[in-house]
Amino acid sequence: MNPSKAKITYLFHSGYAVETANHFIIFDYYQPFSGNKRSIADGVITSEFLKNKKNVMVFSSHAHADHFDPTILKWGKDNPNIHYILSSDIQVKSDSLHFHIVSAYEELTVDNIVIETFGSTDQGISFLIQADGISIFHAGDLNWWHWSGEAKDERKYAEKIFKAEMEKIEGKKVDVAFFPVDRRLEEAYSMGAEYFAAKVNPKLLLPMHFGKDYGASKAFAQKAKILGITTTEISHKGQEIIFS
Image: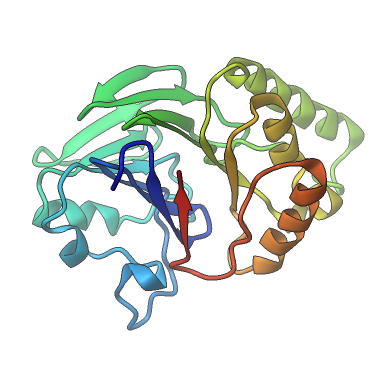
């Protein structure tokens, strides 16, 4: 992998893998529908796949089942050099694995990757990392959760806490961002992603948190074209995107 270039693989829901020049990074792995499919081309990460990989970093933004799959802890048994960066609300017990338990607004460096954590508007944290010259943001459950069925005061509060968190992130350099695009929010399905793009201006913004609803990614890609947001329509697990 050339410097300042990355191969991104969509896994499922909010899960992405990013291969940079010297690292293999996994965010929010969750794969409930793997069946007999056992390759990254199907969005599935296995211990066998990671066994001989160097500089593997595994991030989980919070304990919700759709962001933290306990199977990730098994990977470290076959590759004890894997580093785990886990939100402090995730309960794990092990002395044999490289665990780094973090909360919002912390900074640390692990295996030459600079990690900065921010808050969420639900549970857990979000991540901004610098890896091999590439700046990557993973939102976790940070989003503008504008639910049409909620009372006006609740929707106003959701807007307030989202924009307050965004103020902490504005001005940061972001090359690649993974951000929720969730049609359960109806017309507001991409409002958070649009706001993030306007304030942070990432070079590439990829949607997540849409489960099997690939139509959400398609709709966002069409809207992004109008708004001048660089994205890629996600259509299947295992899809590869090259960032350079």
